[in-house]
Image (cartoon, rainbow, N blue to C red; front, side, top):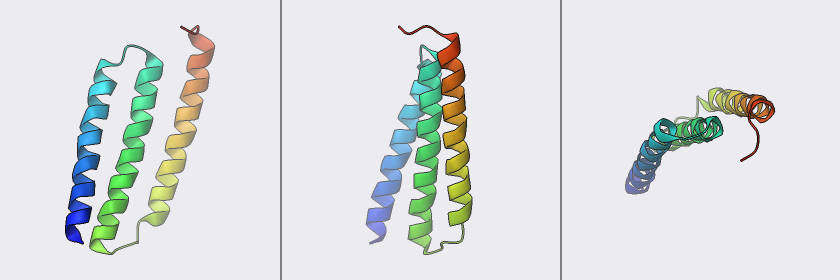
Length: 88
């Protein structure tokens, strides 16, 4: 069963690297905001995979708070950008 966790964690790391590339090369501010949101989601997913691998569920409340703050931050930033930039 450990190989499933290792493969999942490896795929999440590859996805995180691709998201960092998109964050650095994003043309618009909205692209970068979405990249940061996806990166936070991948971080939460990776932490969940790590907790499953170790069999320790003590960080669930922290992950829920982190995901909620990331969601609120993304929505707030998107609303600010929506007011500033015209649609393309």
